[in-house]
Length: 234
Image (cartoon, rainbow, N blue to C red; front, side, top):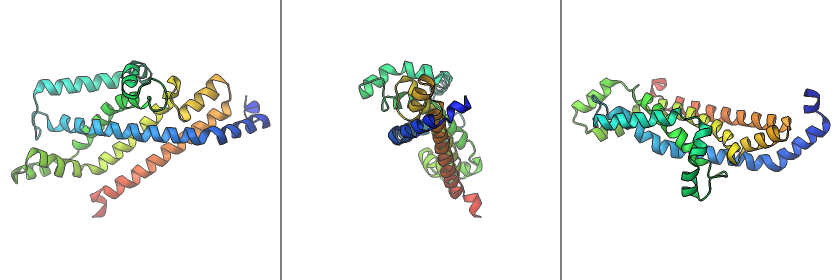
């Protein structure tokens, strides 16, 4: 197999595919990952804040039935395998973007799968905030909204950035799976050439590029989290 993998004709064909299809595949992967992450954060951030602030002893207690409902929905969405969730999201994707397949349509199931995950990450970040800081803000007469916006979120920024990095790398791996339902990107190239046409060198190159993207996202996220951490500046 290795001999056929690196045969001269296989290598020449693979690099021709790299030149013609990889630039678009790379852009589609980046576009889908960043956009899906942005929407997941837009939905997941306020949901994660509600999970912490809305508790019985939180800064803005919410009805117990509402908190129970939110936790059940989040747990249900997180428990559905992504491949099944993609199929279940077909009607919603068709309603939003006009089609159930394609690069843009794959953003819908990606957001549905990732925003509950983001909400849990935000929840864990906010729980790391020193309760003494929150109590001090309350004693100074700060409103619940002020405590959330000016105390809880700013104090947890380094952790939020680290968790956002985890989220974007997870969504990147999900985006590769979307190639099964016609989503674009490197995942589609890897599946079409590696699985359906047995061109394993093309699949290997696509995987290497996906790994490189993960490393770039991780390095940028780690650097931003380090710069935002006030404890490292003392």
